[in-house]
Image (spheres, rainbow, N blue to C red):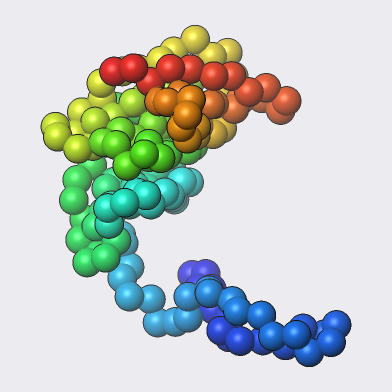
Length: 155
């Protein structure tokens, strides 16, 4: 497994300037294991201790990253989940995309269901991101090289 670690203080080769590196050091506090295939996406909620992971198994898992507790599985994609993102204002929405050519908006605050599915892409959607205010609940998705599209997240 890959574990990242580095000293907190290091000296650069260019003149002894000390810089602060905040990479985690082993051992890991928690090992979050539940997907049946490789993890392809991971995002932390901007306010709460909620983490979401997307996987080659087509599911999204929600975790409490502070305690390490598994919370639940979101099912709805029929292929690899390629990207996940929380609403940056701390709202209760998660957006996901998949190689099944769909984007899903999930309510992760109250009832943990998909509130909207967007279809229409001709190519795999590789990433999706909410755009922070002042634009509101808007997200961008990326597909084939050189394309970016926008959409609304009114749900």
